Length: 197
Image (cartoon, rainbow, N blue to C red; front, side, top):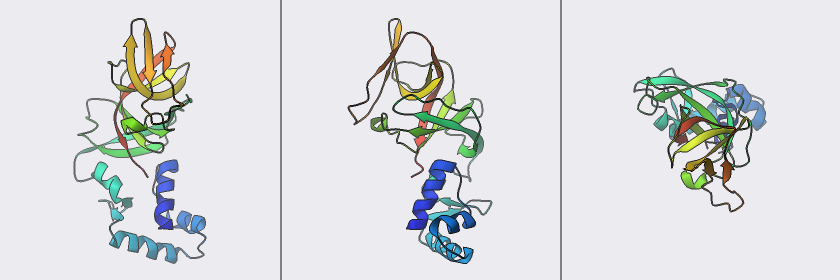
C-alpha cells in the first residue's frame, strides 16, 4: 500500500496523479517496470481506475469527478487555512473536472486546498479540495472562504449586528471565533469538500 500512500500524498500536495517515474523515485525503485506492475495490481483490486482518456485516478476521486456526466474545468487557486489565517495565493495550480451538478456553468467556482482542523466537524479536513462558489456575500450559517486583512480562512459565517463572527466547527478546543467589523471580504461559499486522502 506504499504506492497508494504516495499517490494520495501527491494528489494532496500537487493536485495531480504522480507519474510512474515520480513514484519510482519516491519509492526507491530502480525500474519503472516495478511501479507499473504495482499500479496494475492496484487497478485490478479496484483502488485505481482509468478515466475516458486512459489516465489513472483514485476510485474515490472518480466518484466525485465523474467523467461520464457533463463536467466543467474548475481551477485550483491555492490553500486556505481551517485554523490560523494564511494568505491564499491566487495562482492557478491546475484544473479539475467537476460535475456540473456540483458546479453549474452559470456560476463561477474555484477549488482551494484546506489546511488545519478547525472545520473538521463540518466535514472539511486538512488536505481536502474545497469546492467554492465565487460570490462576495453570505448568509448566516454558510461555510465561507473569507479574506481578513488579505489572509484567507474557511469558517462558518454569522452576522451579529455591526460585526461578523467567523466560527470554527472543530473537535479541537484551541480554535476560537474570529470577530471582525471591517477588512473582511467574502470570496465565496463552500459547496462541498472533496477528500483527497
